[in-house]
Length: 196
Length: 155
Image (cartoon, rainbow over all chains, first blue to last red; front, side, top):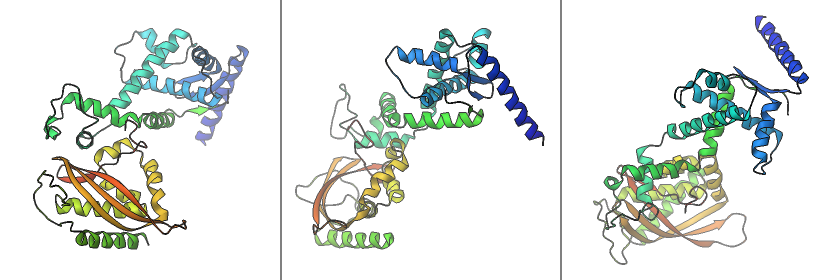
């Protein structure tokens, strides 16, 4: 029963936010725990992409804004950007009026979290070694002195390991981001309210 | 049905290997290429090669993936890989003939072979397809090297 009251309260709360925002010509597009995405936020995003001539569907814009919000939120929680001043931290983690400045900071945090996802993806030593041994023609550097038995596990150095790791996850990147977006959407109970 | 096809394939492969003089030797690895000789480096590679192409011939993606080099499992999405592999389901592999086995380095062997394949929906009796295969030795196990622009855009 209390669950029903909670749902009704949440619904009324969102209706009130929507009504208040609508006065200012703003509509709630999506909500999640601790943040709200307004139509105005999407407009900022459209303005940024508009300068490059890029255009996409409303759903893509909404997803992109949600992804930025969610990834930035996680980056803040993990302190990936180092210690932030209180104002910045507040502006980035809670909903405030979206300005270009805040948007740029959100994008920075988003970028940090994307790097964090890639770096955290587990790639075994065996995977790296197998690629190294399988493709001598692709893993030869200009300074390598090639002899017949050059490609052995013990000639695989740290620099080459980093190069191969980057090659291996290159194809997986879109999927990694999509999976993380889905995970965070569930974690923060994201709801898309209107197809702005 | 699939299991039967795999067993049939393995039987044909073993029979053919013996007839064509592919030595089933369990010797230590010697990265020396003898001109014109077709000699398996060890019995493990021969067995895994037969297993791999047996599964490939029936499009059994789950078992094939186990025999792919570890990097394949990182690079490719399993569902996408299964779609690619299942394309072989509608063909019957009648036989394979080993053409060459060559060491590239002490952890890499190239196996050239010709397969006689019959497409089930085709009116053509059968066709011969040449394959150039790589096998890599990682942690004492031989793995197939899957190299296709499908998963490896830098090819």
